[in-house]
Image: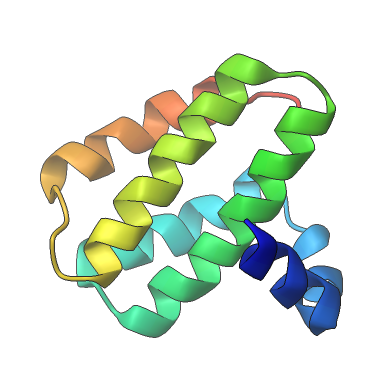
Length: 100
């Protein structure tokens, strides 16, 4: 957690913080379909910002969904993804966070 916070404070936050659920959907899908490390890392940074936003708003069900997305992105980046199951879960994640 400290490392993620430090990375965000060192300059990634402005580019990522403006993102919304709509912005991350394409990146997450691209990561989960390709496993490309750069796509997955970028999607992971955005998911972290959104997960923190959900926590600040006490939107705990949404936060939980985003934590699951982060796990899927990490596993895909590391070559251990859930494949089609992870892609199928994307729609539930985005439906579960409608006002983020």
